[in-house]
Image 1 (tube, one colour):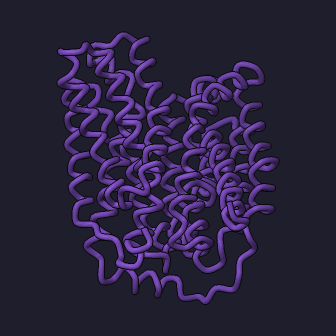
Image 2 (image 1 turned 30 degrees about the vertical axis):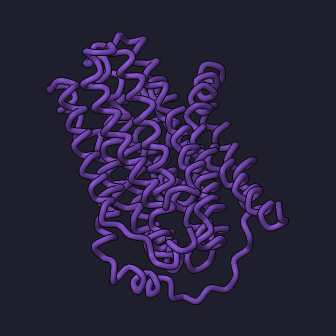
Length: 398
């Protein structure tokens, strides 16, 4: 291994570690503290979790500006600011005694998520590594994929031991003690970049607006489906004939499935192009839903649900990588950071809106119909990938 290759791997591992921490203390945190926090704050669980949706909206509003910032000045300062914002927001949540400070804390956490989660890291990698960023993006998401597997049990233990406020303080400290030093030590200082990011992005995207619309539609539909199923997966599986224990066991396979999908994407890189791997990953979700609906009478609901969870998890894992690699393959490295910021807007808004918009349907129509509708949307998303073509230079590099 050359010295440069070793540096890239070390850099990838470092940013992957920050994602492991940041996703655990932000995106996966509400599931751990929601019940005790709602009881102590005198808020309903729904209004408490609505603040998380508000945080995603705040992140979506910030994402284009952060993408341009990274494109012009590099990712070191934004990622460091993300760790600080996350710590500050978590501290405010720990100090909250009512809705006002609770929502204020989530607003700052949302800004920190825009500054410090995958989109900002992908933009940083693209700016440093250019068209060679795809393997590093895969490596980062491989590590980030363990955030729920580690964050949920650790968070549950901390909440039971030191309470939800103490857990949030520990989470804030992790951002300051782990993530901030990693960013400051490992992310290179920026070089002077001409203030032409927006013009470059426009010049790159302009001739391919149809592909941009397809790419944006793909990510928006798939993240809408993912977010809607995430909050309702247990009752939906119960509606398919699983006992509560079976539903929990089956849904627990989604996380390992995500990691397996990322490993599949990584290992197949030499045999398929980026868009081919994306189409393979996108097809696994509707296939998993077909297995769940049609396989239940044959193999039994529990077996069908486990197969669905693995296939669906693999699809989601590959899709996360695609958020960083597809824009790079189609539009190239010029203006990549700004483009990543704009692509994040509909995705984050879909994530925020999906649970609220789909909740009435989850409670009123059969689970098989809900899964069927999710399968249709996932299939439409897959179709939107078909017109995509990589840039000639990028395709040659693959």
